[in-house]
Image 1 (spheres, rainbow, N blue to C red):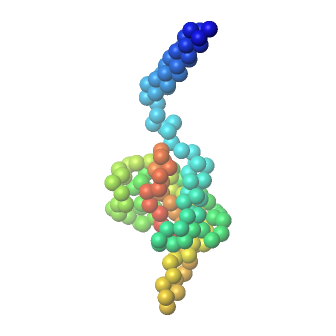
Image 2 (image 1 turned 180 degrees about the horizontal axis):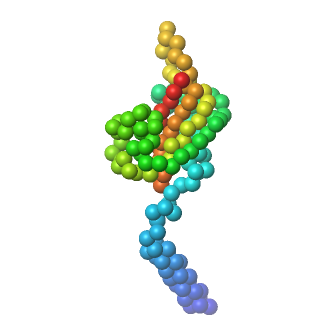
Length: 139
């Protein structure tokens, strides 16, 4: 009986290895690996809720959320009116999601200085990994 389970275990492990290798050898990871528009929105809303030194997390639930897939150069030009600005070592042709939203993000307090809250936030993320590349906040 033990011999039967050992043989069955070897067969099952072999099948799993074959399935993993056949899926990995197809080479069709290019577009299949991209995160969806909905996933990009969910990731961006999560990023927007976390405080960073430049400003606090969202004070209200973000609204008017939009996500567009484009190149890093297009996103940079859209947010800064120039594609010459670089924020990372990434290729300008890299596919990204530009997710923009409305809300309220408070800048850090500076004694004696009134700063308007940010009301619009854009987050640019890698379209494959969902990692933030940069963000832009506007009053």
